[in-house]
Image (cartoon, rainbow, N blue to C red):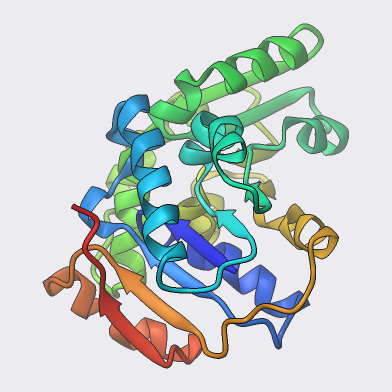
Amino acid sequence: MLIIDSGIGGLSILDNIKKNFPNINYVYMLDNEAFPYGEKKEKFIVERSIKIINTIKKIHSIKKVIIACNTVSTISLPILRKNFNIPIIGVLPILKSAIKIKKNKIVGLIATQATINSTYIKKIIYKYSLQNTINIIATNELATIAERKVRKLSISNTKLKKIFQSWIALSIQPDTIILGCTHFAFLKQEIQEIFYKPINFIDSGDTIAKKIKKYFYQENIKKNIFLCSKYNEKMKQLLFFLKKYKFKKIQEINLN
């Protein structure tokens, strides 16, 4: 199994996978050279995703791919599935689940600019906004804040409040928030502290185990491997955090 993201967001998906399939082995691809995907053009995202899968398939026996990034999933999934004859599983903002559990008819969706601009999300928002209020925040900055938190670097509460200011100022705030980027799962506590009422968080990782189970069969990968597209100082800052995943190998892979 190959798991792809430009940063640590995909590790929140991996955590969910490990809870449900503790014995499964995986290759995690951190495309940190291209972080964040949310600022990239659609053409780049599609071509980069194809390049990553092709490159790693030549090295490891991959039987399924998890696109652990909402931006890549909303933009590239149909194209990737046409290009590869193995299951490609994506993570997508789940508006339907949010609509079911919200209590005040107000749902918040926060995602990267690229995700919000994608045709897929625009169609979903239109579908559900006819009878519900969907408040949207498009931000690329929150992913960077999550990266800082995981590296145990200081994060600014002022910056967080500025990102959510349009919702904070509402007389009726969203009681259900869709985390439309896998990075955001690492900031649930900080986001909750900004609002005066309890928040129901809808996380893409909640449904990933069900999708994987459909394609569950023995992989040929014998050990957990961590690949990055650039082994730099920021990558070194992650090493202590990666210990809990027990990767047998951590190495740079050339995607250029």
